[in-house]
Length: 168
Image 1: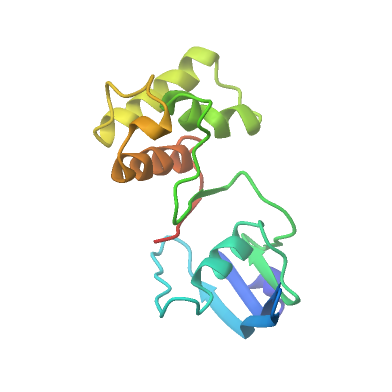
Image 2: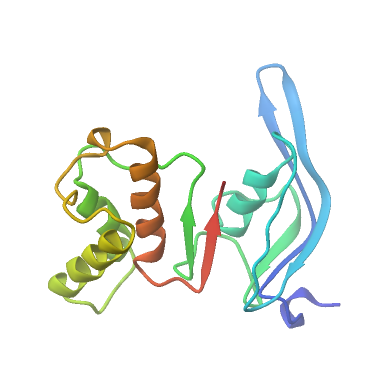
């Protein structure tokens, strides 16, 4: 079967990945094959350290497999793509930016035809949806961990991605 012709939205074919640490090599994935259908919801579960976060980063194009291939919408993933939104296990928010500006960041990176006002309105709508209206001008360190995670979710959604990856 040719992965590019497969009906899955996401296709992982024979993927292996090893991290190199000070104490040596740490194999995390070994010949993983997985298909995720369109319009579906897939959860990858397992114990700590089994490779769940590695899989999410491979699909998002943030890591490259040592062997095998990752396909998204019939195209091999070789770098990050704007059709993917990702919220990391630990919210990665830029301290020097307000919560509103953190949420708007993907719209600044992805070429968007939206006006500045439309970008801000979209970000504000998402923040309101998750209960963060009134916190737009705060810095990440001024919010609780749960509030930062909700802001991170807004950032993952703001550019209306076709694929949403949530790491725990």
